[in-house]
Length: 326
Image 1: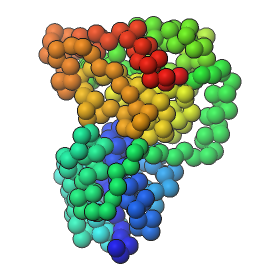
Image 2: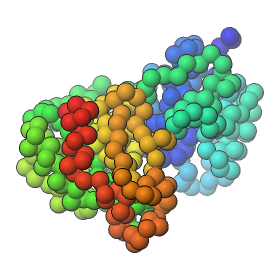
Image 3: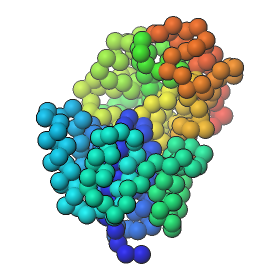
């Protein structure tokens, strides 16, 4: 097959972009001489810039000043690339303009074939590039200098290194993705009592005030000034990562780290960590995996819903032991 040039466009959440990385990884495995470009937001672009299977990362800022001229300049630059395939992986007018405006030979949209969102993205590509093979895992790669810096910081704390990602419960966020904070504290205590070592709390910005009750001598917060790239390397160096359904969960999975997802309203069939080291625990509750943003079973905005609250710290510890995560 003649060498081709491919553009992938995904401007969504961090976890979604990590899921879509299966497309360039699968293409490059089969066609190492193809040119693969990826367009995403400036923040998320830092996660992809070190990936050897992506030849060019294009940052597109949805909050740019003079958005019309900004969009036009990007379309002109994309036209010059003469892409064979453009994979448009979100449905929005902005992405349609970028995709069709680049005048590729073919625009491909996200399909819904496969058991998980990762597989949905893969088969979107495999339906048009027929010889692709489904990878066993996602792959992210770290900048060596950042890895050395973060490794030196983490080395001052005893192993094993377990990263927890408690998230932040807001009045408008998806309630069933956030496990109660007091449960996280109890789980951290149980991990330290059972395995020793250090528990790191992954967060940032406004999450710090919410997560403050977790702090102790052996529960260490990832530095507030860390970049997304820094935090991704912290995840990559962990012995295990425990998280709700969030971007850091999928970043850790893509670094081939033992991961455990605590799921309430979002379904493991769709978003469980991809690969052999990805595991999950869900609730034994009648309305689990409902995908509702706000709970329909009585939890008010800003409260923990009964689905994810029904998962006890003891149950999570049993999963950690069952899967030998640590």
